[in-house]
Image (cartoon, rainbow, N blue to C red; front, side, top):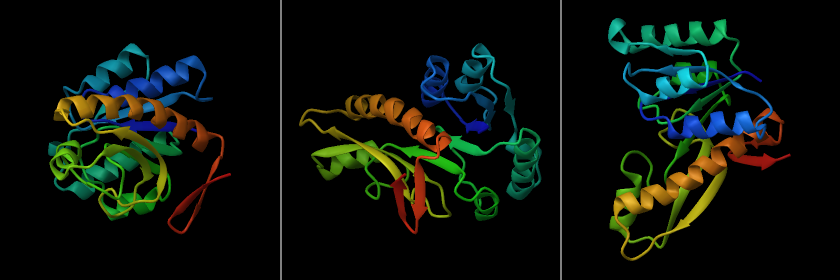
Length: 199
């Protein structure tokens, strides 16, 4: 299975996947990293790991559709089977998602369906939940609305700051994202309607 990671920022989940692959925990390597941010640290991480990486500037295209056509062209060139979003800050269009149906996954810092979208950790604290966590899910046309593959639970402490909670959730992200990719590579998951069943 050929894997591409889309990242816009620091790329800590990308690094977790790179490290898992290097240890042999994932029985394949990352073939490509794509970023919409020229200065993304994720690109530097990919360089260091000798993973092909490409900055595709959205501003160089007349529309989002043209930008995504370029992404698809690159993905086809690399014969990519699985796209892992790792802090990719652009919403993919329904046509792009249709092109790669059930081949795009994302990780989100909440226990979906709670706290979809941005600032999930801050909103969890403001709401007063006792447990938060992270979710790996397939991407569909809704925001953080695709079938859930795996979740990890993190207890919320009474004195937590957003940074405190975010760091504990991130630790779990780094654990479960590579595990899910390993399972997908090994054919361990089946999608039935909204349910993802471990095979």
